[in-house]
Length: 406
Ligand code: PLP
Image (cartoon, rainbow, N blue to C red; front, side, top):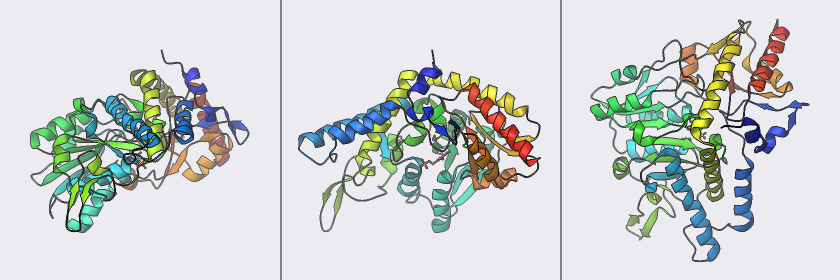
């Protein structure tokens, strides 16, 4: 059973007040709060177990290396990866997707080759591909979402031509909450011989993920949204694609031998991890994933499904509020504007005065804003520790806001 009150007690920050009101933290889509287990793991690592990794022959370096490398296996378990060497540590999804853009796509793609994207991608899954457009003449092919915010897998597959070299798609929209049928896209893409990169930044927080069942080639996650430290993350890359990749960032650790006239790279995954990594961040990330797996991703998903339906019903009851995204099975992310033209920043400031933290702006989703015909929106994004009482607090604050703006 999922006990939300017990979970809340594990997050010290949730007990604090903001602007004289109990904190209602609904900005989890931007970054989630950290449980005591993560805070303790980070404190322990710095207090008792810290040294650089992979480099020393002394006790602390070996200890830190063991703790750090153990996280690779934890991530593999979390994503149901077959072999932990397929997990590459990154500082987050942004670095993971850039690794694929620079390491896999840039050396392989020619002018006129195509990458299929959807209009609801985050900038992290757009800009690295724009680099290839600017520098190499690669063409970006955009797939629109349906009016309710859902994405038809057949529309994605229908955009594939003989020049398509990759499909890069989010597993869950950070604005609309839409959950994409990635397995259907991957099945069709495989028949056409097109690799699929999945941006799992949002989805992995809210549901169990099995990369083998999805059938994708690349799956990127980011630690700070998964209740871990910022600067942590990983990308799973299939062995087949890893074999096709060249390293992205050069430096220590990714190299076995360096001579004046040649270099010999380390074996994967280290080949793709240069320099001193986010040692303690990844150790904290491991603690976060252990915490999530102990609760059970199925249990978290069930709790959030209930919360989503409650929030959806309550927000739909506000006839002066326009929700962006109402796809069946959507996750706990609600973006909205309010009739009468109140700016998203003003709405979020007023909500903040009542202790309710939401995000306002473009949400790093320029093409989606253009597709929706809006400049900005507010976004309430829920996490596993949120409650129906907090949905009520959001609705109360919105009603206050609506009265204020007339
Ligand atoms: N992709 C999606 C869907 C996101 O929501 C985010 C973060 O907001 C990112 C990518 C980028 O993640 P990070 O900034 O942690 O690298």
